Amino acid sequence: MKKTIKHFLLLVALAVVAVTNLSAQINKNIVDTTKVWYEERLSCADISTTCFKLQGDTIIDGKTYMKVYVSYYNAYTYANYDSTYSFNGVLLREDSNRVYCRILYEPSYCYYEDDRFKDEFVLYDFNLNEGDSVFIYEFDREFTGSRELRIVNKVDTISVNGINFKQIELESANKIGDNYPGLKWIEGIGSTYGFLSLFYYIDAGNTNLACCTQDGNLIYSNISYGSSNRECLFYASDNLIEFVNNITIYPNPANNYITVKCNTRDCKLLLYDGFGRIVRNIVLNDTNVIEIENLTSGVYTAVILRGNMIIKTEKFVKL
Image (cartoon, rainbow, N blue to C red; front, side, top):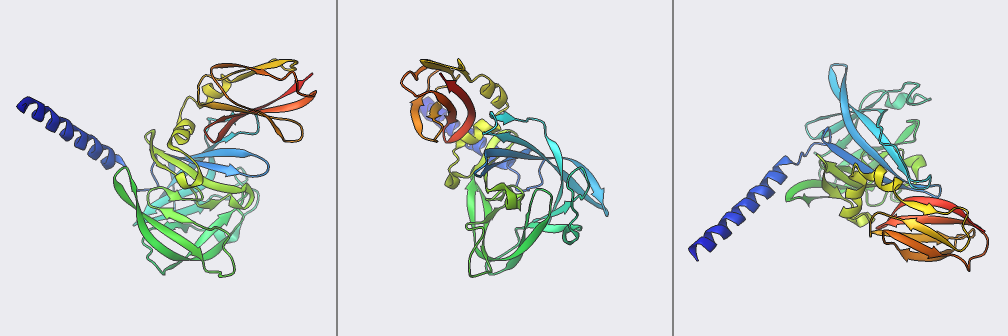
């Protein structure tokens, strides 16, 4: 009996140490080279995920900035995933709970220089309290932008792996309407609308921060938006390219059936006709033979989903 109690206490102690070590490793800074941010962008044109990370530094006016690198995954263009990160012209530094941003207006990054944003500006300020006012900035892909005055509506905390992170809710100072309802800043994470807050929002459609990882471990996911831990871990996985490439749909053109191979049981097939109607809705196994003999001739679109995420689309001809 005494041995059983000792073993139990030892297990509890080890569990506490494990949780403590995980929590201690979470960095409350946004400017952190160990983190990767994943944004989902929804528009009438596509569904895509943009990945952000920080690497390399540069010194301007005696201040050291980290460079923002991006890569893209587009679900409507044959699920193309570009694992190569490229510098997008944005620089960040962090000091005294504020994240400062500077844009490099160079031809390789943008085609138009906006004089209003040539100097650094505050992208995030986690020193704010309820009732304070602050400017937020929105930009298109060529870094022409505007700023909007917002009021701190609420300050509270959210728990990330047992650590409390400050969360600031911002509402528009314009009482007529709010272009960004539910906008929140989260310490160590960024904005609920995206890692760089409202960068690219003007021409990117509906953009939301899906999740954030540190050292490959999920530390935040935007459940309220519809993302799940499984989906975020999937996008954070280095095996994404291999996974997508291994999904096959054949033959094309097809007559009586198509075969769909998906190396997981988490996938679902939606088959759309030329009018956008769903004619097949099937949960997939590893190899699936889908009957299409009774479908009319024409072009169909096969959409493969994992959870709520579109991971591959492919058109085929029904003879």
